[in-house]
Amino acid sequence: MPTAIKPLVAGNWKMNGLAASLAEIDALGAGLDDGMRDAADVMICPPATLVAAAAAKASGYRVAIGGQDCHTAEKGAHTGDISAEMLADAGATAVIVGHSERRADHGESDDVVRRKAEAAWRAGLVAIICVGETEAERKAGSTLDVVGRQLAGSVPEGARAGNTVIAYEPVWAIGTGLTPTAGDVAEVHAFMRARLAERFAGEGAAMRLLYGGSVKPSNAAELIAVEEVNGALVGGASLKAADFLGILAAYR
Ligand SMILES: O=C(CO)COP(=O)(O)O
Image (cartoon, rainbow, N blue to C red):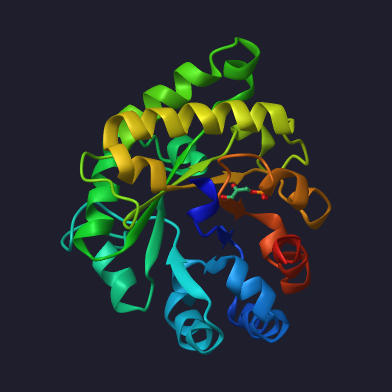
């Protein structure tokens, strides 16, 4: 069954990128070959200020554009926030919700993340829902408990293979250069697959499960080859097209 799932490789630029960074999307488009395009869907999630310009550029390259967060509401008195409808209006087709940096920096609970995923669907966006344990939680042996609780609380009832992507991002692996072993990733992904299949039957079995956390050209092949890993969510190595293409080359 996993072989039937087309992988997604998504770049999360986080709070990085000025207008000049759009040149990286041109470089990405120029560097993508047919083998990469056939093997994986490609997405960039730039900061909100660049979504519209990035979407205008990326459509010509068959690169999708996503947001990094959205508010639960469609509009209203929420200074500084952005709704899923605004992201869709700017050309995004997906939005990351529940990234560990949002959970930590903005105190987002599973309940908030679940409502953000529903907001994404309301606007016609795919929700990329992030889960993952901290270093202390892994050391305490509670990784599967944490991931199970986050899946139960953050993934809404309406999740389907076509509207939801789950990204497993161990917090301690983000931006640190550290990665779990292939065996550890396999254990978590098998667990997530089982939970999602139990809850959503065939839809859960077909949902994309991404791995994220220090994915680089040098380790991409090993990580994406793990069973039940259907792509990657890439931070630092998505900022430069050359690095991102190095990761996509692992799919050729
Ligand atoms: O948080 C991440 C993607 O959402 C991963 O970031 P890094 O690839 O920089 O570790």
